[in-house]
Image 1 (cartoon, rainbow, N blue to C red):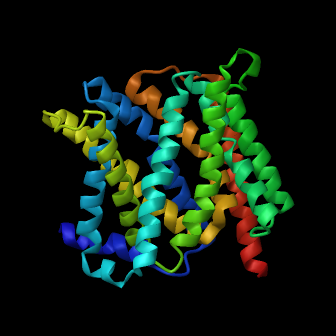
Image 2: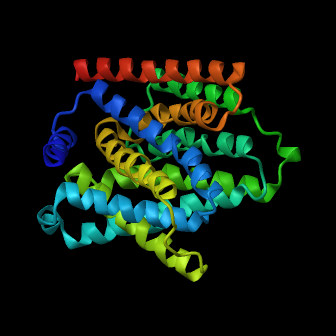
Image 3: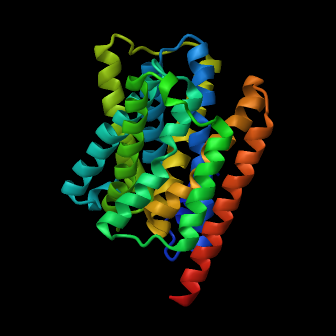
Length: 310
């Protein structure tokens, strides 16, 4: 039964000619999956597991799950240069983004960090315009504005005179790095099955976190089924599903539209925090979520119209 489910999932993920609407849905699923990371990580670290340990086993389990889905044979057809590139972008790019974000929390609160990091759709659009790789249409610009305003309303605009400049630099650095990471990922995974690309990215990240956790003397096997069940969910939802759907949707929509749609992530994180951690649901969170939803609908509509006239 598990084999049949895996085969169906692979067939759905690797099908060619993915429609715009389905691609947008894949990015939403990816954003929701990534949005669960912070809540699940709080639950794991709250059980006494160091962050580096949790991330190391998250990626190791994710790699094992992906290998079981794709099999060893598919990896043999990937050019060695592409394998190395994807391992590097997963190991260094993803790990560095994670490090900068987490390190920024030592200097600034979560709200300002979220605001500063989610400026990355604007940086992605600016980078695409400079490189002339993707045209920023008027509809896309409106959607970008709605998404950024939605994030601002949701988390609150930071007052830079009260924020530690080191934290601001680290947060903006992670946003700028992610804005370069998305186009690079789109380029490197081109022509490869989404799950194969995902596997190589996850293996690269796993290798990095294993080494760093070992050097920090934090690498060990956690005890208890409850802890491992949470790490397993991190591996399945926040890693396998999150990266696989991101890569598939990114290959259709491109970095700019993908980045704008992905701004649903902080809204879902807030809702999950309410449901799991007992956080308070505020009016600003709802208003921000509505604005982001409007941006996503606008992107989907404009993309569909563009596809129809192409």
